Amino acid sequence: MTTIGFLHTADVHVATFHALVAERGHQDVHLVDATLLVDARERGVDAALEERLAERLRELAGRGPDVIVCTCSTLSGHAERIPVAVPVLRIDRPMAERAVAIGGRIAVVAAVESTLAPTQELLLECAAGADVVIAPCLDAWALFEAGDQAGYLRAIAAHARTLDADVIVLAQASMAPAAELLADLPIPVLSSPRTAVERAITVGAGKYLAPPP
Image (cartoon, rainbow, N blue to C red; front, side, top):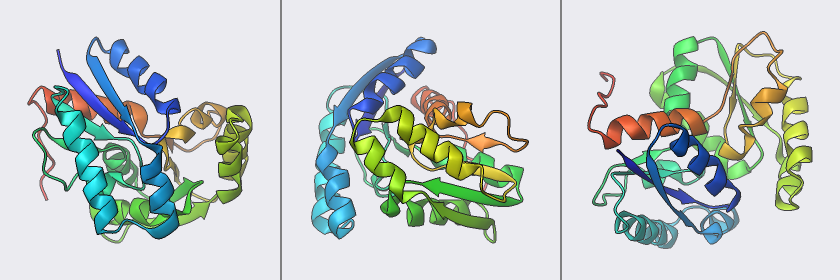
């Protein structure tokens, strides 16, 4: 049995990821620090914030997980480069790998501006020259912060329907339920939570083989 640690920047993610892990018969531990994203949005990810991120990862690693997933798309690229006692995964890498494997025009939907550049960079890292279209939906974030989850997801889905793309990437974990509202679209709509958990299980069990460079 694998134990997965999750570093979140919003409490709402705890229940989502606990359910995904339990569904697969594994265990989970969680640490939430909302100030990490607040500060990243205000001043970017500077050296001081990276050190705080490292402290949280080390704290979480001390709780005994086999692997850690950073569920914040703004910070997860930094998190995966920080050495701690266990592997650290960025939540959106498996999703990005799937998107570039599908190919064509990839539309990235994000409600937080600080997520846009990291997601685009990840997609281009996975496939140099990928056709990536940035499609921000920044007004929706106020609904999320106000606790209007249904309104937030409707706003994301409505925005996604306006896009001309071959695949849509929902860049933030909080957007994942919006994929259900877009099930009638003739193109794939990808989200990160489930694929991240599946990757974490294989990494934690020592069975994951990274794709060749």
